[in-house]
Amino acid sequence: MIKVNLVLLLALLVSAFSLVNVRYESRRVYMALSKAQSQALRLEADYDQLLAHKRAQAAPLRVQQLAADQLHMRPINPAVTEYVQAVAQEKGQ
Image (tube, rainbow, N blue to C red; front, side, top):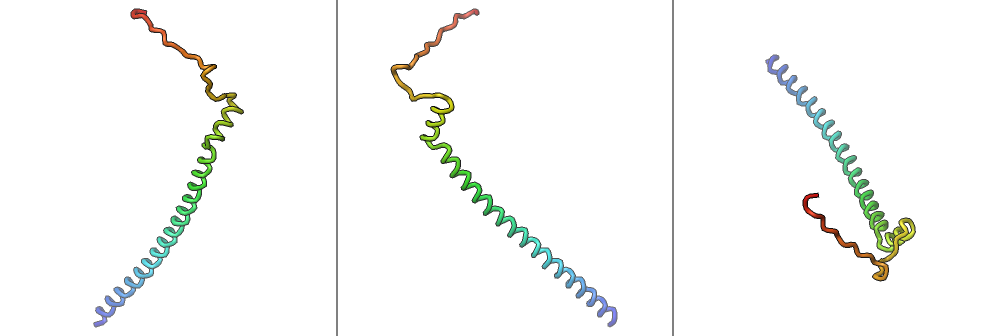
């Protein structure tokens, strides 16, 4: 009878320690999940902000202004258009 009681006591201690370990692991995993979700929300907000910034930078009026100011480009005009014709190369050269 004492051996059965010792085996049952040992089984009780093992199950108690495993329960504590499982609860600790579940809390740790829950905290990691919470951190990952908050980071995902933060990254999504950053992504939305970058998309808005990209749209603002790519606005046609802004691109046209930068092309005129920095690259000294001007709108196309048929009066100053130059046409380039391709020269056919001879065989054998």
